[in-house]
Image (cartoon, rainbow over all chains, first blue to last red; front, side):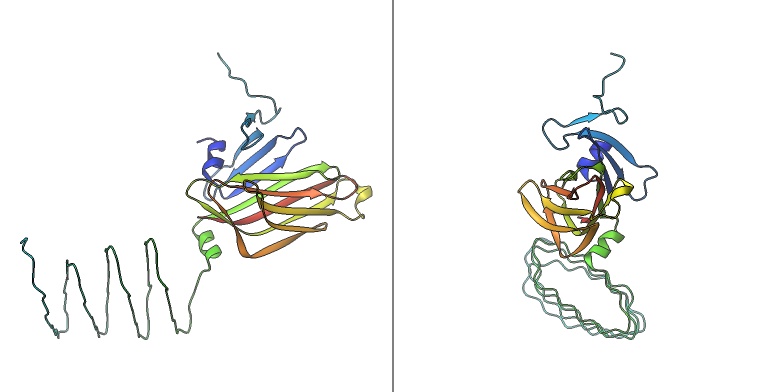
Amino acid sequence: MNARERLRQGKFNSMNVECLPDSSQIITLHKEGDKKAHRFRVKNLYQPNEEEVDIDTGKPITKRNL
Amino acid sequence: MTTDYPDWTRLMQLIGADIMMPIDIQGAYIMMPVDIQAQYITLDIDITAQSVGNISIDIAAASVGNIGIDINAQSIGNITISIDAQNIGVQLQPDWQTLQGKQKYFRAFAVNQAYAEWATGNYEVPAGKTLYITHFGGSCYATAVADADKPQICRMQIWNSTDTEFLSERGGNGGGSMVLVTPAKIIAGKNFRYQIQNLANHNCTFYITAGGYEI
């Protein structure tokens, strides 16, 4: 299960949102008992045009090795 | 046997030092007054029925162990509990849900933002869940040292943005916090939005946190 699915299913105890100047957000989810946090960067969360973007650059994630 | 039984009444009086009495009763209508007086009792009761009338339990003892009650019903009448004890532990719902790992904490922040800019977090409550927010708070401070002594005005709000239902708001100089006496309730499929806005006339960094539980 990736981080976005964890958010959709509410499988976390804490949610941290960093609002960035390009209007994207880095969301970090922690769940009690988990050894690691789950992070992703998203634009237009919960909107029809929601898009997960590269967590470092904020650019669209491109499919590799096609 | 598959035949129907006539009404049946039987009085039983059992006297003994050690009595084991498994009872399996299946009937359309059962009335069974039970009066147990003993020095030591282990009593497991499992009731499966379409409808259960009143259940009265009266325990008088010098010491009572754990009492586990698990009720699963579409509707329940009044539950009246009268406890007279020297020491008792009762968990309120937020405490209990946190103990069960159902706690939820939310935080959103933005760095070095101008007047009227927001930091906003969104969470859509999943199907079958209900989110209860019990508190929220935030802080706002000047990004530049030169503005550190100025008022750091900000405002916070938590709301159901799906229905444009504002649940609670708070403003202040430098931040503030609020405990909700009645938890803010957001049902499944609705978006819980928590946000803070910089209203100082200089750039600020600001945070909002909100917490509660989801069941």
